Length: 167
Image 1 (spheres, rainbow, N blue to C red):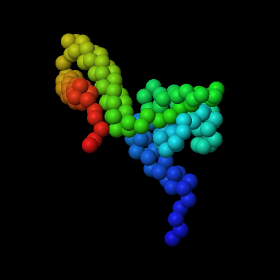
Image 2 (image 1 turned 30 degrees about the vertical axis):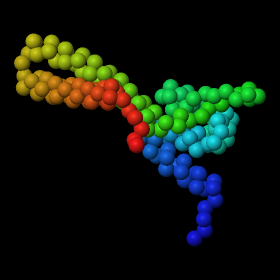
Image 3 (image 1 turned 90 degrees about the vertical axis):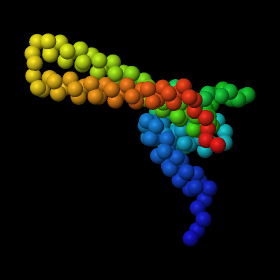
Image 4 (image 1 turned 180 degrees about the vertical axis):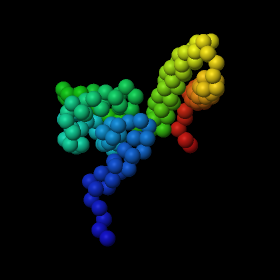
């Protein structure tokens, strides 16, 4: 059994790590890019990223913007370098969990609002007519709304408690 080259080990790490971070809602390209940046010793330009991942510079720019919006990547400055450089945020647990929690809070809030609109529609319809189907829909909608309230409450509690790195 031959020992793999450093490049092979790095590629395997990048593939496996990108599978993990992809579970946090990143696209496959964003996940691979984050993994690549995390494994890089030095900050990289869009050209560097494009060459390493075999994707267009435009694709890298879009992915970096998304990662930056999630606070997973930071633009850095280096004396003598005129192009933008980017590096991965190294506080993995805290960064990913904060991003994930915020995404869940936003999603549940949006869904709750949409469900409330449906509740009003069902209420109006129930004033016009009474049927078993409407009663069933009302009960199910209420359960779904309660589910979203509990999920949002859980994630808000996690956010308020704070996320610290595991010891």
